[in-house]
Image 1 (cartoon, rainbow, N blue to C red):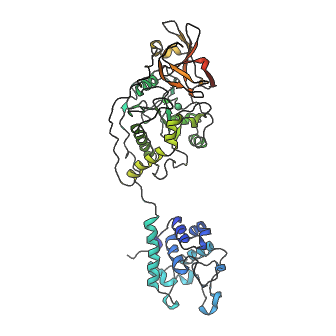
Image 2: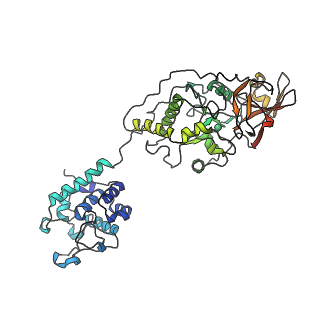
Length: 494
Ligand SMILES: [Zn+2]
């Protein structure tokens, strides 16, 4: 069966733009309207626009007629001179008139309606008795169409879910107990709409994960990764039946516009960013470097999620809904409250490095290649850097159960110290040490000084025997309260 010219279809508007630019065509100025007027026959139209008048750059017909496809009046004859040709208010109108004519069932008793092949169409449109060469005309039209079918049509991408494996990880989801309203809520099914990046402000992926797993701890993040070895721990399987929605990015204040769009989509206020945002903690302090292995696994995790989210490689990091797929915590809470994930992770996700890595993985898979999970060289989290002392947990606090906390905001340990629960966000007002023990004279530090203006999240407040007031952080860092200021009083919950 002969191929019907009506099935030739469209070319992208970019084909029109490239051709009109190439020939210095006046049609470029109104390219969108011209292309739209030609659809759904924009492929044949482009070929004919070339053959007829080289895109309105070469014609006997006055430009003011806006007749780039050289439509004659139905009864026009050469003897009529310029009057032989149709006149239109715009080039787009001229193209629309062409489309109306060739698709008309009745024009000249159905002279076009009876055509089937491109050769039929051209023989009627440009008959040999009118000084045309239909064979050459058809060849040139086909050449123009073929050039842009090859070059500018959008290739089919393989968007089958599950093609990009997650990096290797230790799965600890479901192995611990978290209670409703203590660091998480059970809000029902979760969906990975976007990703959030955090910095843990504590050393060692193991320690950070163990803290978050505690039933008394007012927070929960879905993943933890080691900044040196890339050892990765999953705390929440977001696709599990009834997974906890951790309090990972709260409070929700001064969100960037993209996050406002994301929340608007889900219509459940600030809970949306925790429930439908999967979150990861990069262990270590804000200023600590992250290794190539850590970057590689963060990219693999991001690519795996982005692919399953239906994001084409050349669109990443934009979701199909038009907002970003990746966020730093700070974008949900305002930099005056918290600068998490801090300059190192932020630069990685924001300055193009992560985006380029993820695009590379997505492109490989979506254009037919295969990507394996990265091979782990070191299955263990990195030890706390030598120059620092190990954080010293307080056993009495770790052993607390929900009942101990219910309704009270202070706990007295067996040793006699009283710890008051705090949810304030705090910044250092001077460079202040991360003490291992609550003793100003002590030399032991569990990390670099918290720099002036840098934030941290205390969980407990207590007063030492000498009267000094201290904060204790989630990773058992002791910080002198007098070196700090409170910047936010909203609880951690989003
Ligand atoms: Zn954070």
